[in-house]
Image 1 (cartoon, helix red, strand yellow):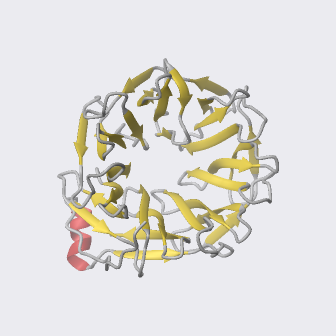
Image 2: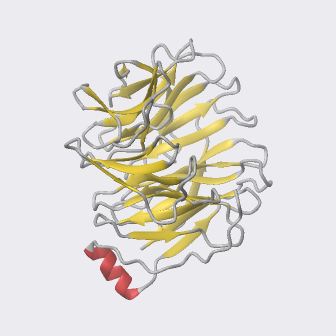
Length: 363
């Protein structure tokens, strides 16, 4: 990616009352952070990788140490960081603990890669109590196994597993530990590590059919699965949902006939809004990706410009856009991944040396 040298702090003019009030008093600002022990070797995939922020301000993610091993962390709103490793985590490069989701109460789910490169799901807390689990029919060979991707306040977990034939499937795990596998009709590859779950138990994610086309799906709490393609997705489409809010809104992205990326919001009634933010490139695999939305209707994601550099954005319900890049010279990419009800965004950025760092965008 081309390096950029742009100042990132700009004013917000968001539509919601809370954001308007905050903007009247101060600029938005970015806090960057690194987990102690995160590696700093250039271009080795090391560093700090936040994944989700809760409404209570907890940030969960992973960090990669100097030996290429993954570890989990939770960062509190006051900046305190707790690191952890789930039981059975391997200690070689590419192995370890990768958290994916967290509740407001601090219950964490994710995956463990053991010493043989097999995945296992886990649930636990930073107090040190973890339980690992495997979906029935999950494979036990290299890069097979079980991944827990999301958890809601009721304790329901969504995830995917790879069977002994190397085929991914979706699953939902109830609070009592019962695991139910599912696949949309025609799927040969369900979930691909991006399953989202809301408080009602609705699940979204992508699946791939036998022709290689990728579609979105929604699974209702009663198990009914509906599939969808974003308007404008090319024939043999690629439609990738990112998550689902408690209102049932699904942000995501799709590819058009020229492989340009466009963002979408799919609402609970099945209608769509598609959009591109200014500055997004118009070449293959450039454009706009919507990665997350909150209950106030704010959407955050990535704009990939004509130089293939990724920038962050926050979009208001009425279509106003706020753009930002992580501070510093030569930033290669700014990747927002999650936004909470207060409009705080978390994600990571890649510096000029190819090392990842965490950030919080504060309104």
